[in-house]
Length: 503
Image (cartoon, rainbow, N blue to C red; front, side):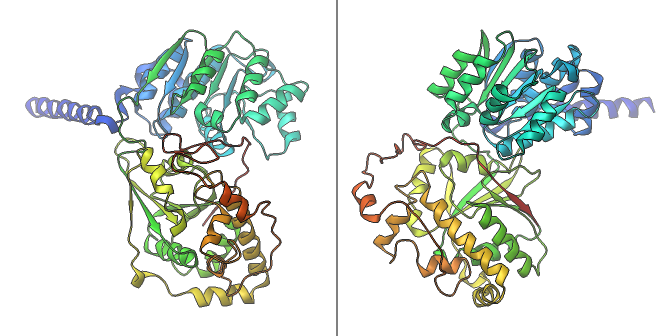
């Protein structure tokens, strides 16, 4: 028996060595470390919550950032989406609140700033899970939410606050009774995206208002000049942690990416056929407007003969274990594309697929993606597998008043969103009148919203095709500052309003 027991122990040790070797040999795509959360000497309440979330070993960014943050150092971290950044800063934040015995009457001890509502909602959800066995309070303040309710909760005392820049600045300046003088730690997540959205001035005002004696952590997927300036402005002597050095791809290794070139009138037919074919998968679909989400959600409910799990969104939201990403409407820029597709193939060895729908006039967008080292390949459409439901859809929309009104609003919103696209050298309503009559108001586009004829909608596109032609971009770039070396150009800052619907 002893011999068998010794042999079993030896096999167990060997298996553990193999597991560690496998984790460590991830190459440029490997994000896991061989360090366990048990090695951090965390409080029992935090560690119990981590165990319930089924986390055992840390990612590289977690293994390198958490120890530094736990001892009070400022950290500048460089890591891509899906690398485990959220736990890397939330675990030390919770431990700080625990060891300083923070209570609601002390006000806010930790502030986490996120670039968008959706990322803030995701971070808030993770924070709630980690705080399951703690008594500290956590809340969320974001653009588009009821401000009065936020203010009331802040006055009562929020120990860990997750926020978007503009709404946080609003509360700092205008909410009486909001106690932030005891702030211990400021965390800025995805700083590059915050600055790309032109929140630089808001961030400077926020940092000036917050106590100077505090710990600061700044995380960013890219280390731009603006990020470096913000780091100098907000961080003291800090520890730089870069786990992405030497990468040749900006997306996860297990992610297969492709794009379809599809005429406007066949876009929804392709989407529906795709969803039926992938009905056993969890699919996330992105649209450009809330009205488009609502219409397509209603339309799929009417057509729902097959069983499939689909989450339809305006821009970005968070959900676990997504198998496939579909970008039905184009992202605003390559950065937005990358953040969308990183919702799948997450974690070590994660697998997933992402597909982008483009009409023929939008083909140039692929150049910008490839300039950003995004490995995306064209996918061929098998016409024989497309569902022949166009006439059924048109009759359905024509005969249902509420569905027709939803289709009109979605159609109008799609055109307005297209017209407001920042990459106007590619996505411009007026550019398309070179091939289609009446600018973009062509029957092909209307057909993609299940109309048999052009619907009557009031539009104010605020410019003319002739003006656009005069300002068409040259080979070296465009009037928006876009080029292959600068694929993001200039963007307008705002706390974006977004929506998602799950089937």
